[in-house]
Length: 365
Picture (spheres, rainbow, N blue to C red):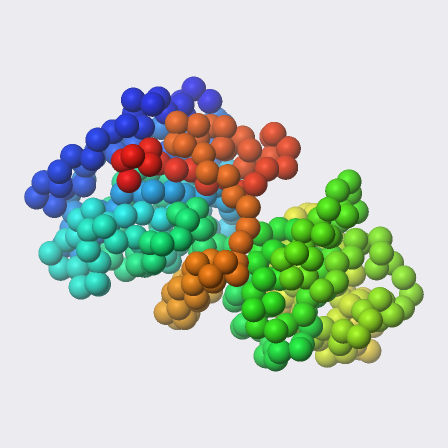
């Protein structure tokens, strides 16, 4: 995309000294109408921007391209930024450059902060000026791609694990979509709490390698969907107790299989619909198994009275990253190759790691 090609000269913008509460000029990936990202995104020059009394100027270090970002640009996501003049991206990590005179949070130049909560953020830009309450200070001794991506997938996994059914060490959960980043995080977070996992993946080439990878992360059992099409699913579980809690991010047949594994009185939480197929619940699931069904959307959670709890969860997640107990694959791409990262994030180049855009040469950080 010609409009999104960032030249090396543009990328090497020198950070001018902060004048009297001015954020320096910056570049942003913006859109003025909803539509296909290739057609509506543009690279814009912005600023300089004057800081308000409670504003914080942040030099963005890295930001991912999430499926929800793509859906927002397309105009099909329930929460959409206002156009024209919307900046893409809802999560990312940056470094504080300057703070307004009325900023009361303990933020100082050089601190790492993440965009949180996600309200009206816009992280695909080299600098961002937002009120102090939209930034959360985080540790700066973890890889920046983890700090940039902690507030969507890992946070979703931790909320799912902790906030729907009380689980104790030795309990079991079941999930479909186990190879997703949320799925991988659930496996590792459950392991850290002594909870066993039953994981369902699609039948496709490479499924044995996927099973091995998930087992290395801490999965106890991994099944393809076809392996669960048996009369007595319980016989496949060995000594594991039937799970009280299940997670569905696929819908359709995968959701039905997740229900079959749940114990009587169990709960299934749906947080995605990758198959674009409905979740169909049988009458027997209600009557004889007494299952409960709930939905989860992270946006509702973090933009409620749970913000303080979520910030504590984010800190805990980054502690696990530092300890080597939480890992997932990302690909760090320089800002000048944003168009390539966007193509990869949309699946145009086959299966790819999560795309994270780095806005500056390391020498400039």
